Length: 173
Image 1 (tube, rainbow, N blue to C red):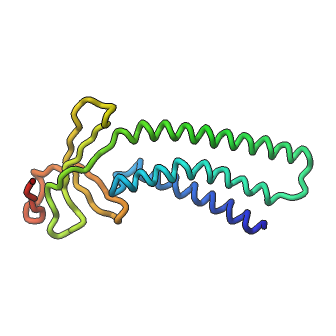
Image 2: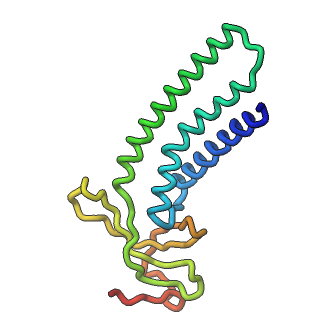
Image 3: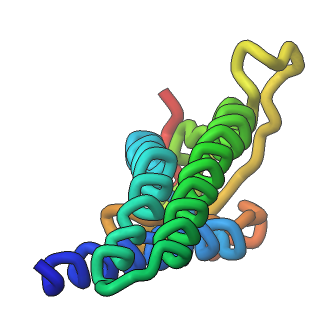
């Protein structure tokens, strides 16, 4: 039983650390998910998974034996505090992702493709806030580099400075 509780405890910690590292990586770099559905899935896993994983770290309490009455009360108080903190974290993350997920970049038409590197393309992107924003979308021209099927690296690009021998303009429909 103790080995199972250790597995749950360390598995939960690993899950929390990996999710936080991916979230930090996405915030500090120009990496983005290649499709909106991947971002939505990640947000759902983060939204529901972090509080559950924090609660599962309480499995470490099952590793302790021969506890005094005072230690048992202390564990119950800490467990209750952790549960309330998880619930507050859950509410906080709900409101932060709800607001930030309304405003997003959407990839529009592909303007140029790279003939030597098939994983690179220049696209027109639109930033808007959907129904919560009545102003027109912000338009940007960006170069997308496929890193993996899951992630793309986004950089702004000036189409006048593209090497026309490598980049081919696609006809708009």
